[in-house]
Length: 315
Image (cartoon, rainbow, N blue to C red; front, side, top):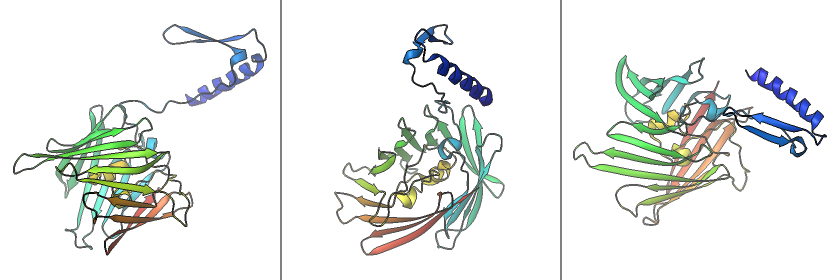
């Protein structure tokens, strides 16, 4: 179909070029509702065609976010690894094989498969461990074509996006098993020129318990680094908590588009807790195509420094 559209476009350009110099011609466009638009060719400067990629309410897969780039695996060195398998017909991620190592002493080692089912009703991510289903989480697609809600009746997150397909808020709610009391945490993201410049995180039931994280995309020795493949390391790379589903689901194309540049530093503060200041530095490595393949994050609070390394492998 695209081939014929291009041929028709080429023919139209030739026609326009021939008649634009004449003032006694008009271009007549008949619309599907039967109405017509008449445009004098003397007022036409240029004619072009644009494919409409955004379909409200329809999930379009990871290609909408990452283009032709496909993540093969990602994770944190020495801690976890997620491997992605794609449906070759749709281009959607159909399985994520998750491996957690026990080398850092944080719990037991484990392996699980997350199978992803797509239907007109939404998306379901089902976890299987040792051939036994351990959980099933619905991912509801909203008008934006991205996830507007994930989770179950006892724990869920609601997301909103702007007109540029960028996530601007998430509201996480969970219910205590012992008391049935609900708790809500709200995160708002401010974007400027394609980058997240600030996060406001309201944690807990205290209205004053708000954390602010500000991001910078240059350093004294480094210019901006273009985020060619749309990489987002939310956890330590930006101190944005999307949870496990969010971290893996982002590379499935569930949660909007990434920043224009790679964040190189962030600072987290809380005016009610002046001693709680986190400073972080991100050091990125790129492949020959300019895609991020490694992130070394150094986070400092007080006299303590924590260094974690993340990696991304591409097909």
